[in-house]
Length: 169
Image (cartoon, rainbow, N blue to C red; front, side, top):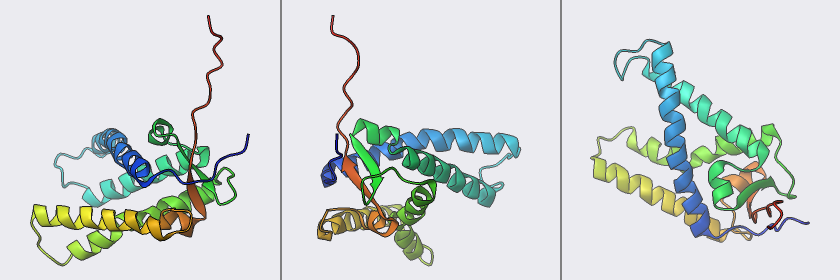
């Protein structure tokens, strides 16, 4: 069986992106609790930079591990797989490169926010606006891929569910 290398629809990819965020909330919550317990932090701002570095590492391990395997839980749910440009499984090095480049989703608005004291609504508009722009830029790629995937040498493809091996009764 050959893998279909067409990109899933933008709507499906963004739905997967949102679902991934919900799942990561749990991963980050448990990781943050573990870090706070082990570092004996008594206040939310204690060891803030250490916590941020630890969570960056946890998310990096999460996406590198599951990128190497081809699918996160959210990607399995939405029938999406990440592969290299030839349709092969990612190496861990390429999966890590994809993770590092995926920060393009967040770095530009964070850089803009740094020097300004914006309200919560303004920050939300900035983040949502940038995510929408970055997502829509995939429409300009011939295979409709996100640009961080192009830069990393990866691509998102449709991955139909594997038929169950259960015999019918």
